[in-house]
Image (tube, rainbow, N blue to C red):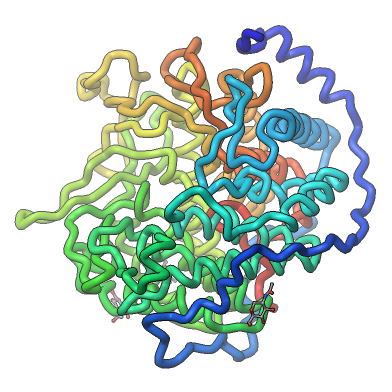
Length: 554
Ligand SMILES: *[C@@H]1O[C@H](CO)[C@@H](O)[C@H](O)[C@H]1NC(C)=O
Ligand SMILES: *[C@@H]1O[C@H](CO)[C@@H](O)[C@H](O)[C@H]1NC(C)=O
Ligand SMILES: *[C@@H]1O[C@H](CO)[C@@H](O)[C@H](O)[C@H]1NC(C)=O
């Protein structure tokens, strides 16, 4: 069967039909799904480098942190919002059903060829990652069926020689814990414990900081070491998942393991080439950080994201996380963020990169889709620490990401693009003579779209969703709806949704890829922004970097 993109007309009719369907959500009933243990019990693994002491979970009473969400009375759930929400749910179901039919129990669906892919150890990454979205959308039958399948999965069997510690933590461990926190299904916590015990083996290095890969052969032979040049975000964004596992099981070793990485970052925060931030890559083996490049995009992103989120998860009882957030946020605001010169003089902010040499700091005004999480981070961090100026920065960043979406002919942001920084953030008039793009096909205001793909990423809608919950302003919902329609136009395939090769071209071909975050994050955020504010209330839950909701300490 030849697969092709559906025509615009067919899409529009489909959308209209979807809007006419009224949704009904029966209350989910608790079920007891049998737990089938994996074939290796990793908790019996004898470490070569045992810990001297274990930091216990804080026992102080959680602080009443300031509210994140706007006052309840400010939110209005209209028929229009409900129709939009139904449309998102239908698109989710289309992709999910295609996964079920063509790639069941595999990591990913290949949405053009209709086959499955193994990309993360072969442990049904898309299914585990989507589990809590099924729950949130009230898809109870699907949730039950997926839980039964996942409870029988053997996380000790893989054809791979090693696994990516970060990806397995955020997708598998995070997915299981988020689904458990929502459903209370005991088997999901038991599976999370199996994955957590396996990941804990990665910390068995001489200095107890984990490597990028957990290589099973090296682990059995006591040859694991931390990396000398690893992405800073990789060992540094395991804290939420490991801490939640400790909170739920009462075993503090997971929290202790991930917290050690952050205590190392705390020791060096003010001694890097850009004091306050950590370089893109870090020597976790020698515990030094000499790199000269600083970013909140790829390789570093969730390190920063997890600081205010840990503050929320722990209920503010460990001052280290708040201090790390506030110190780094100052530097990010002062050095990485810039106002771009754009034709409509929009007052927006974009996150660039900084590199340091003996002459000083240099801003590289290139940005990434990945950096768009920062609007939500400043929104959340600003609310939790009572700093309104962070919330304002977050708004300008989130609006900036929306602006970039709308500027491209497809209505979608490229993976990497460049803009022209204004001389002053206060005023900045468009001056066409200063616009000299490297590449003529980019819209006015851009210098290039060096990587013009759209990989179905969530970060822009993530920040826009958080801003909506902070402000209750429907401006954000309207922006989200526009983005949703644009994404559908370019990514919808016969079976599901696929990554886009070139967002500068309205007739771009698709790429045979649908990563698990499409169902775990992107469509979850689109669904939540059109849902009433009590569904995953940000004063009760904190969402991980893979959008898995964890209950906050109360
Ligand atoms: C794994 O081993 C630990 C320690 O011996 C034990 O408490 C636990 O129940 C075992 N897990 C399973 C699934 O058998
Ligand atoms: C780093 O510097 C900031 C001020 O810029 C300060 O608030 C913070 O406590 C310092 N961190 C450490 C670990 O000394
Ligand atoms: C809020 O954050 C900004 C930027 O990080 C900082 O300059 C300011 O002092 C903070 N205000 C308060 C009240 O903490």
